[in-house]
Image 1 (tube, one colour):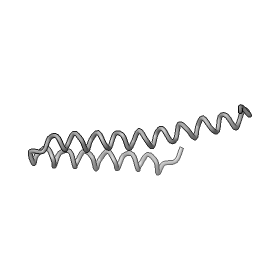
Image 2: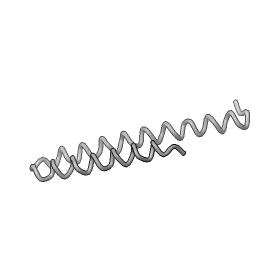
Image 3: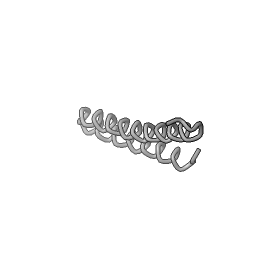
Image 4: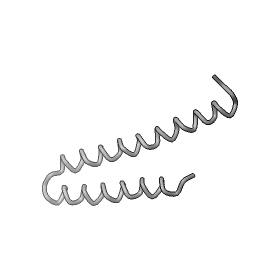
Length: 65
């Protein structure tokens, strides 16, 4: 597993937590929740791409068409 991917997901989480806290303190709770939701969707997109690669590798390995 690539360690850069773990750092990328962790940095997205740290950035989102800071942004959510700043927006929450500014009285914009709705925008804070929206930014958190967008961040979760981005991370899920990254993970879904990796799962897709995994299934393609398994299909290639066992020569399933």
